[in-house]
Length: 430
Image 1 (cartoon, rainbow, N blue to C red):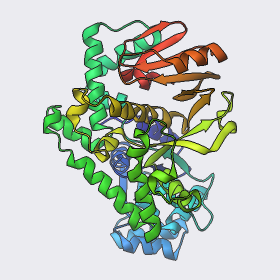
Image 2 (image 1 turned 90 degrees about the vertical axis):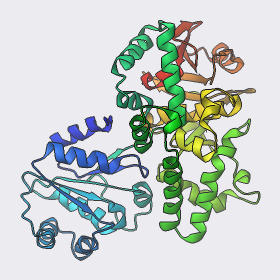
Image 3 (image 1 turned 120 degrees about the vertical axis):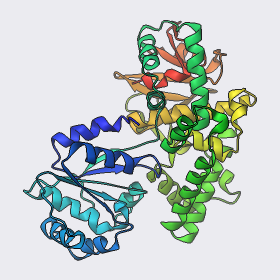
């Protein structure tokens, strides 16, 4: 399946001097993408799983000199490595801090080494690196679950994508049958989310939700929880689990600003802050900060106490919430559909800027503030077709933005300086 990260990999290939590190949560497709890239773009390719190949891991424990590393790998694998046309993929590199350190020396070597690496919880590893992380010596890229556009590409809906993009630019409504088709595809995505294994299973079952194996989502969540225990001390693993499992309940509140007391009635920031940082670094959750001024840079005015948390994948949120897919497709649970919708928007927006903000003023709240072409643009999110919004109207009246965006189930349009963006077209927002 096509992933947008492939374009970044092709750019790296043109100037591969710095090793490339692909960071992302488990099951987002890191290994698959890098294997495909290596096999399709280089004459020779070597795959090394440092978690499973203890003998190779010991090589890095003994030396971080690139020439010696290659020499010992040749002996252990009984191969000849021509570094001129060979790319080496170090998977699960987070298990060897020495292997990560060695990337600096591969970068500084005069020889044309081509190294890519990936691993679960790499973000956590970097944040807690005991020695000096090779800053400036590694190209870091992030991989997130498949966004809605990638999901449409996987379904072969290229013509629909082009039509959506065209109407996003013109603000002209799609004809009703196409709009309704896109809305149904969006509803399916709320159920499935963007985990490649889930989307693959959906496609393999003729795109019929009734036949999808939703245990895949449960297994991914189980693997996340297992990672929390495997790579942390026991008490921290428990706290990580508590925060992660509390997010459906946090988001279901009318005021869904994160509260430690929802995690545990006796919880305090000082006790849970490191666990929160762990989950954020792992890319399992996304943070949306309250900014106290709608001015650039938004980050400069962040309230360090108030924020919202979202899961990194809307399908996992549905699964963790134990919400039946029919409740979404048949719109039987309007309240929680709004929760999923807001989480979906967060997942679509976050990868583009690596940050999310919301804004409070007077008695009102704006769901998201984003920067487009230098202007701060307010975004209001609606899960259905109702588009009346006191908060957005008051924001416009008070701050007079260049324009505003309202995301809902309504068709494209532009009225009263508000750009109407259908839920299925959020990927068009740049």
